[in-house]
Amino acid sequence: MSKIIFFHQGADEYGSDKILALVASNLAKNNQVKVILDSSGPLIGKLNELGVEDVCVSQLAVVRRVNVNSLKSLFAFLFYLWKSVILVRSLISSYAPDIVYVNTLAVISPLIASIGKKVTVVHHLHEIQQSPKFICSLLYSFSGALSDIVVCVSDSVRNNFIDMSFFGKSKAIVVNNGLPDSDVCEMDRRLTLSSIEDAFVNNDGFLIAYVARLHFWKGQLEFLDVVKILKDRYGLKFKVAFYGDVFPGYESIWEELKQKADCLNISSCINFFGFRRDAAALFSVSDVSIMGSVQPDPLPTIVLESMQQGTPVIGYGHGGICEMIENNYSGIIVPPCDKEMMADAIYQVCANASFRNKLGDNAKSRFQEKFSVDSFICKLSEAIGVGVS
Image (cartoon, rainbow, N blue to C red; front, side, top):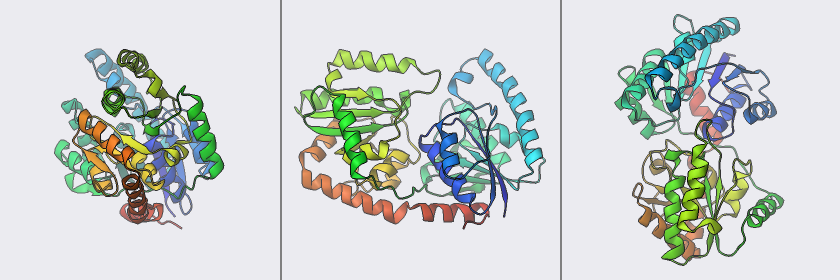
């Protein structure tokens, strides 16, 4: 049995949060586990529900763009980081773990705090960050220099780490994420579909799911142009359900989305539902799921969740999605940020029921073959040298 202390940014239930909960709960079955989060949120309850009871909140000095976008904010952040390192080092000393497990690139204080400690440091990377180049290169170099093992969720993440880091390139290994079985019952499907339909004046047509944290690089603003093309050029009857809320400090995107939707005269076709826990049910009742990130997405959990429910995914061809689905077989990949091609692909999938069903069936089969939770946890535990039950 090993003692493992996890450090993670935030406490929501998006992609990296779900993977953290999955890893911690599975390793806790045969190891002693403690989880440190940067803030309070629904992830704490989820961890408790999964059997991880030792969960604390502490300042981790999570690196975000708003913290380093000026000299003044950078110096303020460095002071905050210094205080966080002292606090985290104290936590590590008191817990005396065998493994310090740091989840996501944005958390670096535990890496620094582990210097000189007799622990194995694992850094689990879920990001493909490339700009600002100096800051990103610095973060990746911290990871390479101060970690013993760098776990990358996809080849795209590993390749980016190798390109950006000055140190530790040979430490990087690839372990694809997986998800546990998730069978959505008919009652949950009906409840989700009813709540979605109640939000639209016109309920005719296809249901398109767009699930992602609201952020400029996640592509919601650009996808509104795709909605306009679908509405005006193809005359397609459809509705788009956007799930997701914003990071603190980025609230302005709400107003930008509303203003652009009004300007394009597409407000009747879309609805923003904020964060909801019934994403699996949404995918199960949707005709298509969109992965529209305008920058490379490492290994999008929403793609896994969509495949799991047998829902065809249409996404831009950069990042981890290219390793997840086979174009025109288990999903559709279009050139990055090509709105015309995205609109055409959506129309082709919606207009052809047999093609849509084939894509969904193949996606579900591929998920079961390549992204099962048992395979994921087994590979990860072997990589970091711990036992699982």
